[in-house]
Image (cartoon, rainbow, N blue to C red; front, side, top):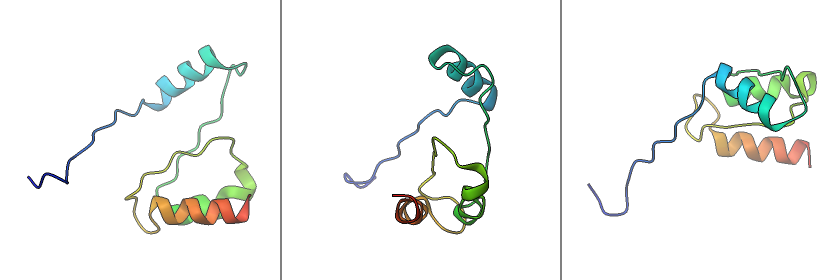
Length: 77
Protein backbone atom coordinates (compact mmCIF):
# COMPACT_ATOMS: atom_id res chain seq x y z
CA UNK A 1 0.00 0.00 0.00
CA UNK A 2 1.34 3.41 -0.93
CA UNK A 3 2.32 5.32 2.19
CA UNK A 4 0.10 8.26 1.19
CA UNK A 5 -3.00 6.21 0.47
CA UNK A 6 -5.14 4.69 3.16
CA UNK A 7 -8.70 3.62 3.75
CA UNK A 8 -10.74 5.36 6.37
CA UNK A 9 -13.77 3.49 7.60
CA UNK A 10 -16.41 5.55 9.35
CA UNK A 11 -19.37 3.76 10.85
CA UNK A 12 -22.61 5.52 10.01
CA UNK A 13 -25.58 4.78 12.24
CA UNK A 14 -28.76 3.31 10.83
CA UNK A 15 -31.83 5.51 10.42
CA UNK A 16 -33.24 4.12 13.70
CA UNK A 17 -30.02 4.97 15.52
CA UNK A 18 -30.04 8.49 14.04
CA UNK A 19 -33.58 9.02 15.30
CA UNK A 20 -32.58 7.86 18.79
CA UNK A 21 -29.47 10.08 18.81
CA UNK A 22 -31.59 13.01 17.70
CA UNK A 23 -34.15 12.38 20.44
CA UNK A 24 -31.43 12.33 23.10
CA UNK A 25 -29.54 15.39 21.86
CA UNK A 26 -32.24 17.74 20.56
CA UNK A 27 -35.68 18.91 21.47
CA UNK A 28 -37.24 17.01 18.56
CA UNK A 29 -39.13 13.82 19.35
CA UNK A 30 -39.58 12.73 15.74
CA UNK A 31 -36.84 14.04 13.46
CA UNK A 32 -37.42 13.77 9.73
CA UNK A 33 -34.77 11.74 7.97
CA UNK A 34 -34.57 11.68 4.20
CA UNK A 35 -32.21 9.65 2.04
CA UNK A 36 -31.07 10.39 -1.50
CA UNK A 37 -28.85 8.24 -3.67
CA UNK A 38 -27.12 10.97 -5.68
CA UNK A 39 -26.11 14.60 -5.55
CA UNK A 40 -28.53 15.38 -8.35
CA UNK A 41 -31.42 13.97 -6.34
CA UNK A 42 -30.46 16.08 -3.32
CA UNK A 43 -30.31 19.24 -5.42
CA UNK A 44 -33.72 18.48 -6.94
CA UNK A 45 -35.27 18.18 -3.47
CA UNK A 46 -33.50 21.01 -1.61
CA UNK A 47 -36.31 23.54 -1.91
CA UNK A 48 -38.94 20.98 -0.96
CA UNK A 49 -37.06 19.52 2.03
CA UNK A 50 -35.12 22.56 3.32
CA UNK A 51 -32.82 20.34 5.45
CA UNK A 52 -31.05 21.55 8.57
CA UNK A 53 -28.22 19.03 8.21
CA UNK A 54 -26.82 17.35 5.10
CA UNK A 55 -24.39 14.39 5.16
CA UNK A 56 -22.60 13.67 1.89
CA UNK A 57 -20.51 10.81 0.59
CA UNK A 58 -17.54 12.10 -1.40
CA UNK A 59 -17.85 9.31 -3.94
CA UNK A 60 -21.61 8.98 -4.32
CA UNK A 61 -22.98 8.11 -7.77
CA UNK A 62 -23.40 10.86 -10.32
CA UNK A 63 -22.41 14.22 -8.91
CA UNK A 64 -19.90 13.54 -6.12
CA UNK A 65 -20.15 14.95 -2.62
CA UNK A 66 -17.74 17.87 -3.08
CA UNK A 67 -19.46 19.04 -6.25
CA UNK A 68 -22.84 18.68 -4.56
CA UNK A 69 -21.60 20.65 -1.55
CA UNK A 70 -20.31 23.40 -3.85
CA UNK A 71 -23.73 23.62 -5.53
CA UNK A 72 -25.59 23.64 -2.19
CA UNK A 73 -23.34 26.35 -0.75
CA UNK A 74 -23.63 28.55 -3.82
CA UNK A 75 -27.41 28.25 -3.92
CA UNK A 76 -27.90 28.65 -0.14
CA UNK A 77 -25.15 30.83 1.30
